[in-house]
Amino acid sequence: MSIRYNRQYKRDVDIDGPIGPNTDIQNEFNNNDVYLGGGGGGGTYYIAPPNPPMDDLIYTPGLEVPIVDIIEPTPENPTPNDPIVPYVNYEIAISSNLQNEIGDFVKLKYEIIEGGDTRDEGSLLLSDSNTDGLQIPKSILSLGVLNLYLENTLPPNYSISKIYYTNKQIADKYPTDYTKWKVGNNFIGTQSSELLTGGVAVAVILEKTINAPKPTISLDSTNYSKQIKDSDTDGIVNIKFSQTDCDFIDFYIASDKKIRVESTKGSFELSFKKDFSGIFGSKKIIVVPYSDLYGTGDKSEIILNFISVNDFPSITEITYVDTIDVPSFSDLEIEYEVKYTTFSTAFVDVDLLLKDKTKISLFKKLTPNGSFKINLKQLKDKFSGWNGSDNITLILKPTNTFGEAELVGNDYEIKTSILYPLINLDEDIIKKAIYDAFIEKLQFLEPEKESKYLTHLANFGNDEQIIISSWESDNWTLSKKTTD
Image 1: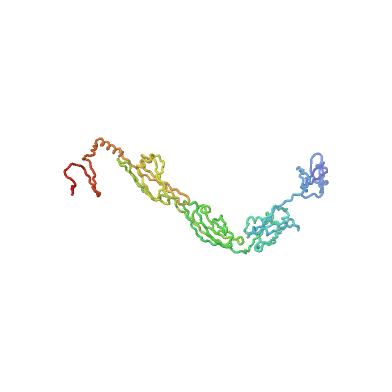
Image 2: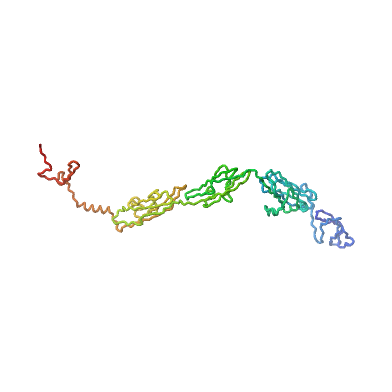
């Protein structure tokens, strides 16, 4: 009988030998024999291989030993049955305060040494920031050392001021607080176990020597005030400046909003609506000159104040008749005057409210301050929709066209009540009735042409005229004619 024995290192061993409960353990069992036990008519045991590994499976009576097959090697996996070796991912990182300027001039080389052998090595530029996808067996990092070499080909106006280094955990927690980092040099040696935190970071602090003139700016004024009327669509403030050794002028109109202007322009416009969202009040503007060679110069401040100005059209005063008491014998030939004054108004329109509550134009584009007259009879004759109304309701509307946009004011309504007589007598009808009554009784006799009842106008020369009321025969004369 044969039993397959499986070891942890996946090596199969055939074990032969008599197995039975009557086996003499003391005589039969030696250092190479393991009693398995069994049942039936006889005992069974196997002879273990000489010098088995310490991690061999130990058989427990009554427990079935699992069968593990051997995995055949392949080109892709030449040692499938070797123990699994744990690996660790890590990275090397480098940063600087002037990384964007000199990223290609600073290089960091690294090597991991364990047992006198170099287990891993490489390099990265400052512009690369960090390595990617590095792996190494955990056992190497636990026992080895990490060496870092900083090399540079910096331009003459750059120099290294400080070098700091730390592990990834501290670098993530305190990215710019270098008091929590260690101070290093062009060579840094440390235990490679630091990489078990995920990596090691190096920070290079650089200094830059400026060999260019400092940019300066001169402002024509540092205080501006702009009135914004209701009729204005926007308000523009023109800021003038002069400069020396500048490439650009930066205008900081808010903490998070900068406008860059070419220094050669000499002026810059700010919009009330676009740049300040139409918000009134005082604004502080920081002006910073900038040079590509030098950097930023001394800043200046501008105070800009936007003031709200009311030019919305309005009517400030209206004088009119409150009530009209119409006489019994009136022909409605009644007239009254309306006077008005306005504010920020170019002209005034006047509408008449009809009985059906619709409006009809009465006057167009009256002067800003003035008056107009209302005649009841004319209203009656001209507007049939108003005739018979017990009031005269006028609506005055001011309009301002002096600004960039036309502003139409509110409606101003005035109402004059009309008190008609209880008995309405039409004067024209009464006059005609009286005339017709008298005309029937009157008789007109037309005299003859030579009637003595006719009057005549006699002209005696020198513009002397005498009315002669009658003519009679007489024996006297007004003049006597004689012959010489």
